[in-house]
Image (cartoon, rainbow, N blue to C red; front, side, top):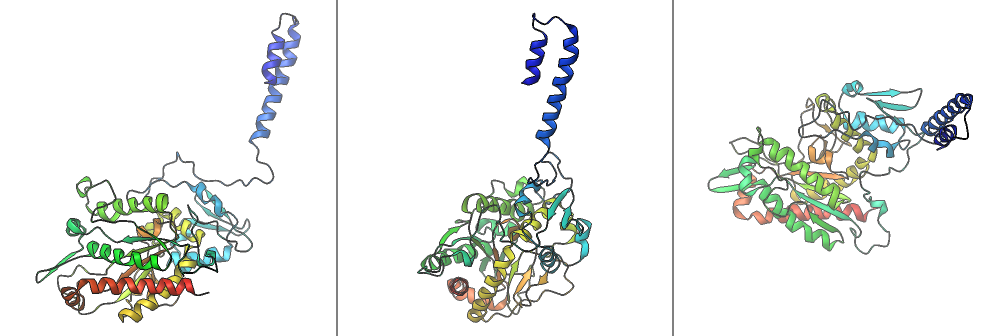
Length: 399
């Protein structure tokens, strides 16, 4: 405004001297430039975080992945100590040192450098600001609640789709006239579990309430049908959970099984929490970003004690032995020295922005399971649901 005023004055009919122009215009330009530089410079209390601008599309993304907006990690600035960051990174979220290719620890500046993004450490751990939405921990629930799950929002995610989609999902088994479809069984289990949890005080939402996918895509829309049910469908569920339900907890219900045409002789049980990112997964920029979202939001601090209680209740109810991944497996690692808890990087437990308990009980193509299913499948669903409900009640009732 000042520059414009000076120029107008210099062009006024009342000012004829050209020497005035030579003086006024340079002064005006100098004032404007100084004001611009002052406006652009951050104040002393303004954090200068750097990240890839949204227009810089990464070249390496996971299947159907989207370029991450690194500025969404700014809420975690100076909330986690270097020691806690490295402990979670090395004991939960990775299994080797391949992360060093993508993450550099700058000791002098007390920060982690991830590509163009800089994460400042704090001198001591502070309460996490949460994920995309705020989710409640056990300690956030009121002490005077009448029921153990009162005030808790739970999303039940019945794994797979089932019904007519079971065959293309490769989650359908036929044994002597008996047809077992995982997606159909998980939905029936969820429908039984929902009122159990509501009686304990929780608000419960089914992520899927029918034998239909949430994604608008179909298998024929992809060259590889696996992208339909493994990727497009899970990403659609993640959008529903993160943008609409916004729960405090997601329970992913699954039945374990193998692709063998010969029935297994026995069953087992384990729970999967997010972790153990491989070198190939960390090479995807969106997966690096999503790993850091989980690490920094502290979901694991709620998941491990909750999973312990569910595992205890499940083992007591079903008598199923724990599943043991091979020590040589690059995609899994045991957690908290608990035989039932394992870390794996699955799309669901990575994208759902709150604590996620991913259940893998029974073996649906085993002789014991087939025998029980033939007699009374609903007995299995009730047993499954009751064990989960008991575990949740135990955790949220304890101090």
